[in-house]
Length: 375
Image (cartoon, rainbow, N blue to C red):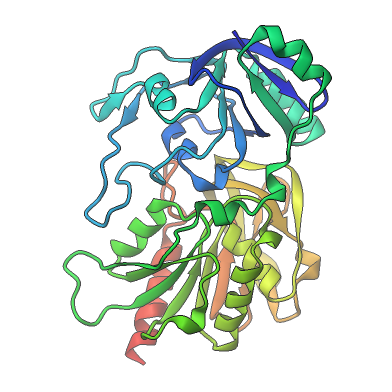
């Protein structure tokens, strides 16, 4: 047996799977019907206990942990599981997929991540929607459940600089396969970068220089055509060094593109503000409506999302505008500068939950990089 204790004292009890250990974190939910391996290895989930609303998880197993020729994961969004715990209604004890090499149970046990199955995830999700995300603790030992509940003090992971925990420590350069001499170079700030973002740029023939979250842009002594700010975990206001370097890029009029946390950091860099959402957007079916000249266009794309903070539209400078909004709650899903040399989106164009609705954003940005190089 294992139990999830929420910060208000609510207890959900089920069966333990994965690693039989205790943990704590921010309890959130994801509405995706597939993609559990990508979610668990997404650095943006650092510090969180992830609840899957889809009732059956683990049925197609886990693929190989092998690395690409560039040295990063071939099948996952990073080389580690970043969630602190997993909550599901029913975990599948068996699996079937041609690429699977492990069960979810064994994979989580290997990475020392605990899980609970048999919990009413509908009831838990309804509670999180009504109350908002909550801190919680997974407890394996029933004998200490009452003691834990009586003295519950759960540290908030968002008070830590989670980006510093997941970012690379030194610059790493990746050249696309079959690269010719003249290819665009992109400085990519790794705030917890998903590996499919790296793949998306490399397959489009871009040299990616992946740098730590606090890398001094002035320290790079080579030529580059653009700056990219990645996704990542936690409160964007913790990333003061990244914000300062985005400001350097903007002052130099460098082409700048951000995704997810990168959208929030770009907004903060230009004097805007961010705030915490009640329960965030985490799923693969979020509609994003494009805006031009202050009005909604006829383009609505279906996107994959994972964020708990958002940009405050009312605090954007006059030369910045809202580029995309969420079709469900109207929150900001992208911003753009009037000069069209800096822009960002809150959703994940590198993810393909079905149709690749948003992948054109990579094509557009890479096209701009190539024009910049040719100028």
